[in-house]
Length: 440
Figure (spheres, one colour):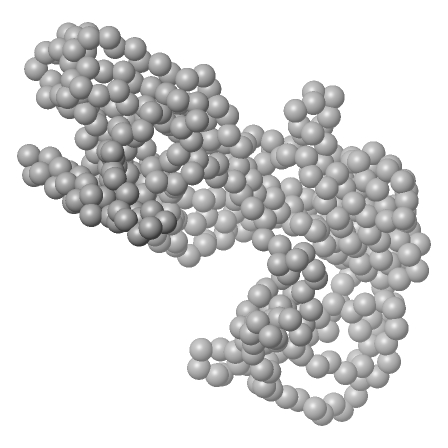
């Protein structure tokens, strides 16, 4: 009863506001109002959902009407309003800066640790043993998208009174008939600390490039507890004459099983110079889908004098049965001199990770026609706890790699943001790069 009082009071206020609204003609006289209707925008009872031109969506929680829409995943692109390229001066004028793939507020650098003295120099590669372990950068490194699968409309045609509906259900004493619950998206409310577990299989002895090496299978498993909540509107039929279209109903939300077709640009560095490599994606040979920069589709991939190589890899359409397809998730793009992607007899190799995740929404338009019925709505909340787990197994080759390391201690409260490091060499090749890493 209180809900009905609030409903009709709201409609009365809307009618009063409309009645007092002044619409004047060219001479300044109020125009005559022949009639009007009011709608509090909490449902589709006033409109005609069966009309083909009825293309609106209702925000039942806030009492707002919006155009009909589709939810899509949009990739973030930094560009001007006219599509122009953003320069450093434009970023400075907009009070932000870009460092690598990060966009932050402007910051200044201060020296945290300084050690300008040296007693002697040390060769980065004192024993002249080259392993040529390269790296691959993918652009884009990931892909996230949404797909919608629409099934035929569900028409519930109930000609007759509300009692007819109750008799059909076999329970004439029902005070209401629940229809469905329209849910919003799941929202993360709490994310636990990732827990990483590393296991190593028993090692085995083999040879690679004339060296005696030891192989071992390393399995990294990362799990993270996540608490999620979502809100929704629960709908039910109560006695009153009404004809209602429930609109689109999400029947299920699942993951797209296969990675969609997309072109990925790759750049490899620190490979062995002037060496031919073979591309593999998740251990599948993909040479016929790779185009080297300046070359043709399926052309040979050969590093330059500096050990650099670039090109593009086009993931084939998974809907074609003749094409290879890969399950969504994290996949490894690998360049190697071994034509079968074996771990032995490898002169040089490089790997990059690609992550693809798609959501599939299955929706259905539901139309219910009832007699002596009205739609009552109630806000509901649902929670769930999930565990996100990812597992990756790699085979590592233990080789004669002897990096130079220097230990330092950060004793500042809260730590520091290390934005740059100055390293001094007595001499260094102008083209072959040196990798510098900070490890904890």
